Image 1 (cartoon, each protein chain N blue to C red):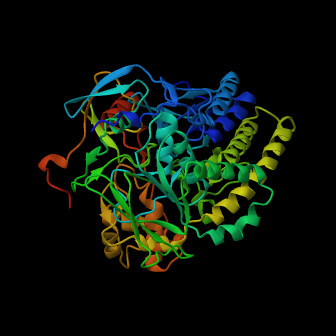
Image 2: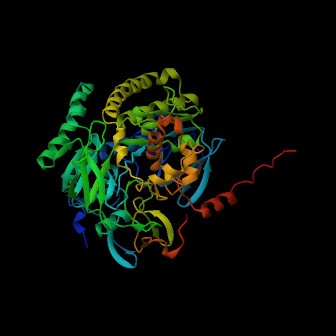
Image 3: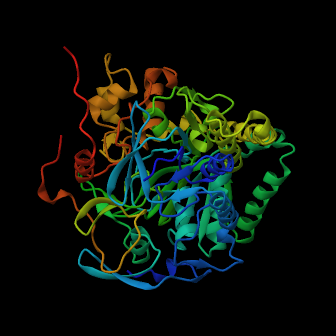
Length: 476
Length: 104
């Protein structure tokens, strides 16, 4: 691959926005994306070969996304799909894997737009086949044209699970209920925070009306506390929650389902930013661990930018504006455009972003996961799904010297599996923070090393055979 | 247990039919589908067993969690939610490590 001036990692709303602005300013831009299709989760296009009818509610944001992708391509952006960025090194180079082959590229600017993923909430039985995330349900329905199951229950918090439930019933699926963990009173009291967000409220109302018209009950102050089945999910136990989301004894009920969708909000995917040595900070209002950024979306490492959910959970619109700001600033730094040429567009993006961030903050605060939900975890509940490490093990191995998240990982192997701690890290952090009565920020985070996702030894060996030998060290 | 009607009718057209093999058994899929979709449609929700012998299936559905990994044409740890079916693909759903000793 010829070395482009700007590499954008991730082809979702933030990545597309960043690439478009950098290319418009005259930079050579390549977007590297791990998925087979361009668009990320939000602008997900139906898989090749699957054609949705034009009136299908399932295609939702896909046409809008396609228009943006085409616009970026017309401006000169090259989208490379099925390309994994698995490493980053102190000299500024990135290592990638494309078609089974590893390679090294060294761009002048890197814009990280790696998105977010679903926050894990653990309870007995949460590893059973049939227990999936709301995002998985959406990917199956919208991207693959398949229902995740026959009798579906949604449990979690916030508008995403409502949206997914509405999509599933519109597709003809049977959703037997949506459980919102927050009590109705909490949401009612929070109502004024969304004053003025009429389009968003209307969107929420549309989902609610769709669910109501199909007879899907929406229950407040309740969630799933146990999943049961052999070998796949066949029923769940639900329970009422108090204001802190502690299960209330005596409120349990059982219901037969084959699919449970969990939607407890998103976590920023900061792994590449961390691997590149960018400073991070804990901000629960933005989804947890987030990179420290300038108002130009630049990290503590010059020339490295982060935009979109990876910069803090704020939704697709905010992601696009952040991407645009990052793209403009990267181009400015390279001298592709002057400040005066781009000031208008930069100011417009900042203004829109400000409004979006205000809305996102309200949403993240109102639908924040409350600590009582950790009460669902027993000593036998698996926390690290990859290495099958239960909470009891983490709790016992935590000691006077294993005080950080990383040390507990080393002792227990929780976080050393195929997903490289992606799923368990936020969960283990919250549990250990509660156990040690410390703020979660004090526990640190898993140390990130390449490869970010598993690659074969063969690909590594092939790469090292093609690289020039390292310079001899002149130690003495 | 054949669950063909999990595939939505609201999508007007599917890709070409493709035949794949799962644990030695032929399964019908369509072009554009992932391995996870083809197995779900065929009623196979258990995609593998862990070292401890517990069943796992799709969880995150977007390539993050690695819970849905299967063996594809001899290559292990392939994410079924991210990998499109190809004609003649041979898939094995890993079982409880075939008597290998568990790491402690």
